[in-house]
Image 1 (cartoon, rainbow, N blue to C red):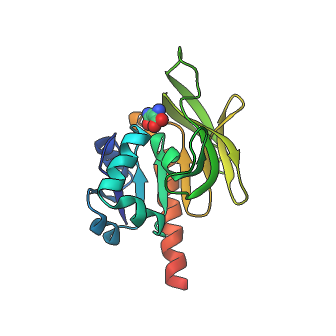
Image 2 (tube, rainbow, N blue to C red):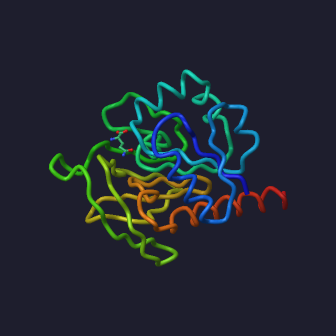
Length: 193
Ligand code: GLN
C-alpha cells in the first residue's frame, strides 16, 4: 500500500518513519496530482489555520473535500477533518461528523503524555498531546476509540480516523497500524465492488 503524508507543514518525517515501520510505502504529498497515486492520506499535526492557508494555496482544500481516500488526521489533522470547529463559522474539509474544540487541555498543561486504551481492539497506546484539541460532539456513524478523563480524543468513521494527539512522537505503532487496516479494508472493498 502507498500511504501519503500531506507535506505542507508539521511532523511529516516522523509519520513517514511510522508508515515504513508498519512495512508500507510512505509518500510525502506536496502536490494535488500525487493524491491519485496513494491509497490513504495522513494529515499531520502542526497549526490547523496555517495548514488550511497552505491547502487553499496549493489546491488541496477542494481536492480533499471531493476525495474518497481514507484519511487519518492527527492533532491539527483532526481539526481539518471535522465538520465543526468551536468558534469557527465552518469546518475545513468536513469529512468527519464531529465538533472539535482547539487547545482544550488547559494552558499549564499544554503538553503531556498519556497511555490510552483503544476500544474495539483493546490495545494500549502511548500518546503525546501538544496544545491538543478534543472532540466535543460525535455524529451518527462515528465511533469513540479513546478518551482521556471525560474527553474524547480518538474517533473513527468508515473511512476517516481522527485523533487529538501525536503517536508519531512515540514508538507506538498502534494507531498507524489501525489506519493501515482501514486502508486495506477500503482497497478490498473496491476490488469486490
Ligand atoms: N493547537 C493546534 C491547532 O489548533 C494543534 C496542535 C498540534 O497539531 N500539535 O491547530
